[in-house]
Length: 210
Image (cartoon, rainbow, N blue to C red; front, side, top):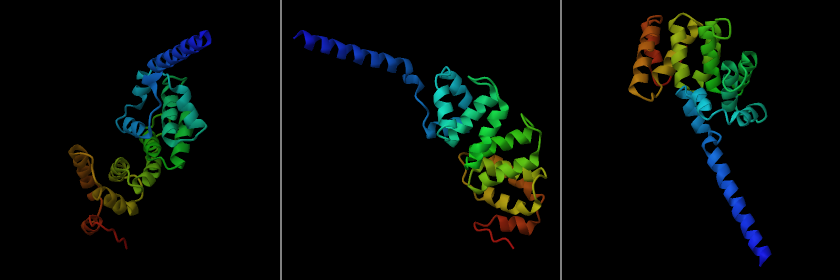
């Protein structure tokens, strides 16, 4: 009887300790891919890490460095670039973003393109921005397509790619009216650099380049 009572007490204490652990750490569950993509697209990813009181640093680092998950490589790289919850180490941060880009991460490609566009952490090189943006745009990322057309309209990249970039963005599906209006403005700016016949051909649903 005593043994049964002690076992019951132990079980209750163990259950209580688990509940306390959950109460303490439950708010800091690791992010799902969907959550992380939404945080990246809304530019809230670093703020979220701070709001979570830096409790997930080890998990984020492990998923980036050991598991080589591109979305977590993006997040870990940006934490290192900006010194969020860790000591700033831009050389390592940019390298991790490049690894994620090599794995096909549109988010990493676009972030690197933005760094080279603005000359932040790296030497300003907008032609290199085009190089990072092109594959993401080709894979259907609308934000990458918008940035590519912006770069083309500003005179960066090869003029032989203008028609393709115009075609991709013209035939994209937009998240909201604001994004659609911005895309329309960018297309108008690029169209100035192209013959009317090429613009008309680029507006077709299927592009048959000669």
